[in-house]
Length: 408
Ligand SMILES: CSCC[C@H](NC=O)C(=O)O
Ligand SMILES: [Zn+2]
Ligand SMILES: [Zn+2]
Image (cartoon, rainbow, N blue to C red; front, top):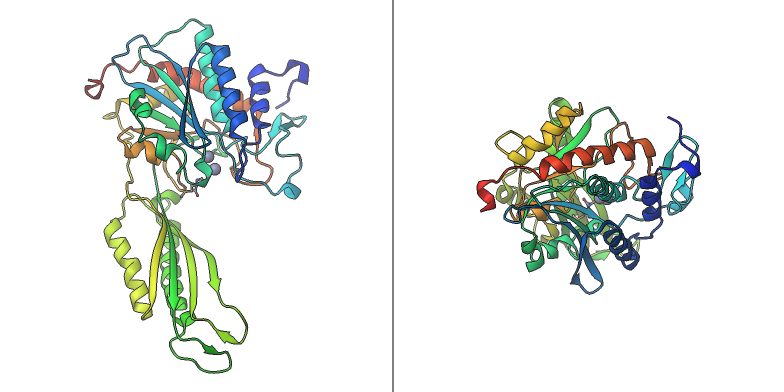
């Protein structure tokens, strides 16, 4: 694939690169610049623009293209504006310069996750508007803060607000993950994040003695139980070619804390785990399992949750779901092959589905190595532009889904 010279760059690519240069990087994203960028887009495209401050300094920007039949529920196109931090020394190019190499690869934090999608939505809407189309259903684009740190000051608050209700969303698209093959991955559910800290307390004393009932011994037991469970889930995934990563429960030990000196046996130690619980798990039984591992380790071992998502939802991927029918029909017509999966990580889709709005996680990026959150995150401009084509076909179909019982 060759790229055009800068003077011939496709204007959608130029806009994408402009957005990539806005430093909405955690932990201190420049949200003000992003909001101003989308307000400007609304102005240029002749779209409605609403700013909803869900928490001080956390604004959700909503761009609206009204449909011809306001009685129908709307299509929600969601994207988050923040991006994860970088390790600059590991990048071939400045991650906030949106450098394009001679082959057409654009290097930038957010190139895949998910600034591409925000601009692809906008450019598809622009094309359709320029061509003079109108569709029955209203299309809302929401640009939300805070997803990369859990969405608690973003979509989680927004879905509870009257402004969200007023959008009357019937169906949503949100982010997916790139696929290195010819196929496109589409996510119909997500694993639930459970962040668990196990704290063990025990007898302290001199480091030279055989102290009994130490915090470390008991913590070790819990760690062993949990890592044995991890191995079991890993084997289950490995041994069944039909299972994808998101269909089993994963866990990683991500933090160990405690201790003050080599020769002081500490009274407290803790271990933190990032669990991602598969949607078909019995959540109550699973929590009891965690508690019983703690109890089995001995007295004084407790657990607390830093995240505990309890509302997994599945968006049906069969023709009983008219949104899926419309989505998959377009993909079929365009000869795109789809791989429906459960999202291994957590996105804002979980908040959308939890308030009863069916959602698909879809980033139209095939033939692209998975580089989200990685060094040298990049996207080829041709793949980006193909994604605009795909939304240009998807939006008319979704915004023309005939009236549904749920619309009334
Ligand atoms: C559990 S809130 C954190 C959300 C985060 N989302 C994207 O990476 C994730 O770790 O999945
Ligand atoms: Zn993302
Ligand atoms: Zn991310």
